[in-house]
Image (cartoon, rainbow, N blue to C red; front, side, top):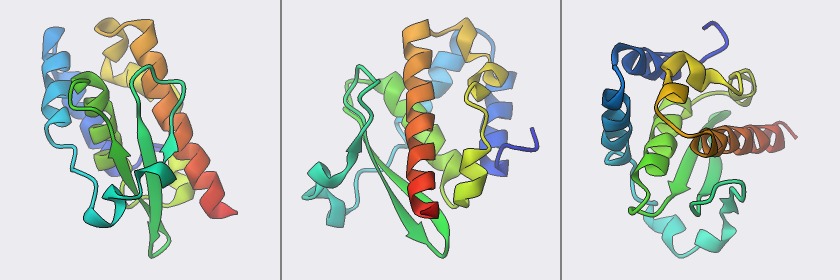
Length: 142
């Protein structure tokens, strides 16, 4: 797991300890931790990038702080699993350098066992969120 930033590696470990439906419960718990958009961004949601591959409307914006990326997500409350994805991706990758984000394997969720409890369509959404975060990292690198 050397290509996975430490905070994301810790989240992966937490999911590895869970069995079956506990993984879904943990996703919902993460959904509850997704912060609201900061005040400066609430009126500028149209400036956020959308993740069109997700069936749920997901919007993301990355800002740079001291060379590291901090992500902001807007995901509807009525989509707790997708909010959970966004929340653990934010928690796991906030403060990472763009190069670190680019090294995260596209199928890292297999280490979490999520393919055992989620549909292929949901896993595609998770992959799309990571892919979009990587696009934002590439933009930052210029």
